[in-house]
Length: 119
Image (cartoon, rainbow, N blue to C red; front, side, top):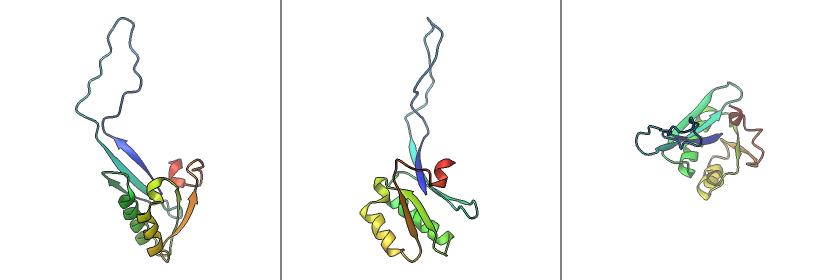
């Protein structure tokens, strides 16, 4: 499983313009963002996901519940060690669902085993 942040009005990082002509970028409103959490079932290729207003422990737990419900045989969840994956709330979730979920932790610096990262 993994997550990302989607910006509806992303920051403009670079713009090219002709010399002597001012560059203009039309932008409507302020940046709005939301988190997208997802898990890829490597056996079926099915993507299980959800959106959330923030990337936090509660959103992570909701996805873990979805993954456990989708694979009653006790899926192995491969995830990195970002803060909200390793929080006290999520740790209690792992303990409470240890018969339904197994975890495989990989360092954030080596995400290759996380299939959804390759997307």
